[in-house]
Length: 292
View 1 (cartoon, rainbow, N blue to C red):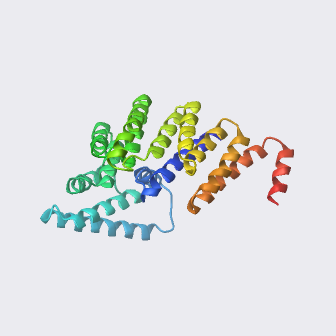
View 2: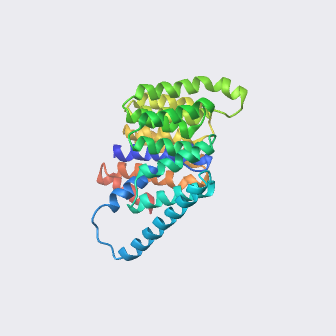
View 3: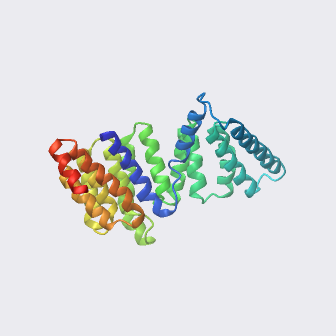
């Protein structure tokens, strides 16, 4: 149950911190790598011919874009098309992360202010073992925009992968300290609650639950209408076995959350009730009657 909850916490961070900005690149490369590993397994498929045709078509598209780029190396449309095709080939098991780095480097060069291309390039470098290169990209983005949540989350994840949790915590604490001045210069440049949620996530990953809850309490105190820290605290309390208090917070989060998040929170809250029901047959009976 603890692993499941921690996995949900990670999903919450991706969904509620970055989803409001439009979309998240965080799971993209990881998902593609998993798909690559699955496709490399010798599993028979009734659609092998169709899949082979699709892969041949993707390879032909890639060659076409590469020919265009030989003549016009800065052709943005061809670069974007090549990147998309390379990602699809990785998903089908016929490509590798290394192959997306050259088009991403060119796209980043042509769009230096684009967070998305730079974050995806940093992720690709990290997956291929160039963690220093990835860190440099994240730090460059944060130098220009300290409140860039995608870059901040990316660098934090990288530091955790390097088993440097204190560095990740220090980075987030420094960002929070800089927030008042930064937001005075440009309102909203650092989303304090989102940074607090990432900090709480790091504490949770280190099983420093009291510190995580303290961060969430501070966020709740200053933002009583924001469901995110309430939900994060509910998950932490559930991990500690305090299901009664966590259920109350789940209810508050459901009430405050936008419609698009209510169902997922409801599912997590229901899982909270189910874990209580498993403690005793009597509890299970009560839960069944309640649902009826």
